[in-house]
Amino acid sequence: MSKPTNKQRAEWALNALKVFVAETGVDPEDAIADLICNLGHLSERMTNLGLYHEAVARGIAHYNFEFDEDRLADPAQSELLEMPEVTITVKYRDMTLAYERT
Image (cartoon, rainbow, N blue to C red; front, side, top):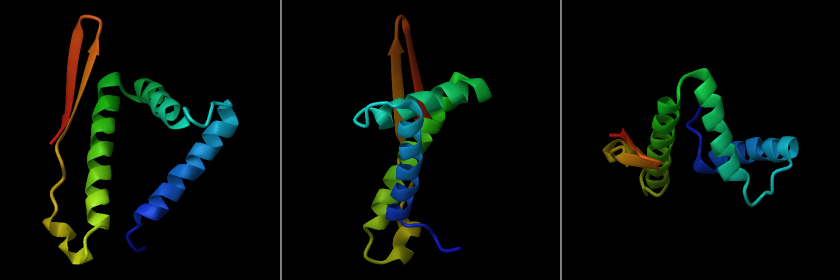
C-alpha cells in the first residue's frame, strides 16, 4: 500500500465527521471541536485523561509533520524533516497540566 496523501487523510476525516454530525445532530460549525471533545470522553473510558492530552499533542505533531512533508518538492527529502515539539497546557481551576510531544 502506498503512503496516503494529506488529501486522502482529509477525506477519511470528513467521512468520520459526516457520520458524527448525522449521529449527533451537532451544528456543523462546531462538529470538529465537539468530536475532539468526545474523543476525550472515549479516551477517559478506555485509559485515563492524561493519555488523551498526550494523544492530542501527538496528533498535532503528526499533522504538522505531514503538512511540511506534503510541501516538499522531493518526497525523498521527508527523512530530513523532524517531528515538531508540541506542548499543550491545560489550566483548570487551581491546576496547570502540561503535556508534551517531543
